[in-house]
Amino acid sequence: MIDEALDALKQGKVILLYDFDNREKETDFAILSSAVTPETIRMFRKDGGGLICTAISGAAAQAFGLPFASDALRFAGDIVEKEGDVPYDRRNHSSFSLWVNHRNTYTGVTDRDRALTVTSIAEYVKNFENGITGKFADDFRTPGHMALLRAADDLLDQRRGQTELSVALAQMAGVTPAVTICEMMADNGLALDKEGAKAYAKEHGLVFIEGQEVLDEWERRRAAA
Ligand code: 5RP
Ligand code: ZN
Ligand code: CA
Image (cartoon, rainbow, N blue to C red; front, side, top):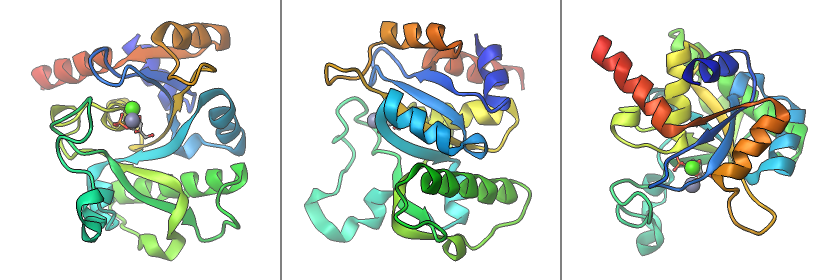
């Protein structure tokens, strides 16, 4: 299944990415940020219903001056999350960075606006990978309607959320490490369970992959290197 997931991601298709039975137990839609269209945003908000976020590599975030939200908000005092606060991952803080809008958006929340913000972020990350670090503030402002997620520098060796799983998949697929994700929610108010997500994948002809399979491939490649 890992090969199908890497292929689908590379082709700009949506995949379903479950994390771990001992973590959130959630499935996120995931797609290369460069492939996002207004229709993708519509699908994510209507069929997913969670929070739409774009995960980028730690190196790109660092180069663009995008901190973790928990660092940026430190001045706010005790309300800011710290290690131990995230109940399913007590060793790490969340991966939230800043929330941004492209400067050419209007409200920033429409499908068109969010797609513009996301694809432009992908463009910045692609340029960064090619040695060109643009000035992020020229094209984006914060606060905005697209949550940026900053992957841990050592990816799955350090943290194992969909942030790192999706960026690791992009890295292993050899494509720009900017992936847009959104949790799949159920009509009962809870996260969609694994069986429900698998059923959705089957019905829509999409690849469903678990974090453990991504981690196995990550470790296999490292052992082979
Ligand atoms: C943002 C989240 C989601 O869980 C998303 O999957 C990224 O977080 P993580 O890397 O912790 O899984 O909290 O909506
Ligand atoms: Zn989460
Ligand atoms: Ca998650």
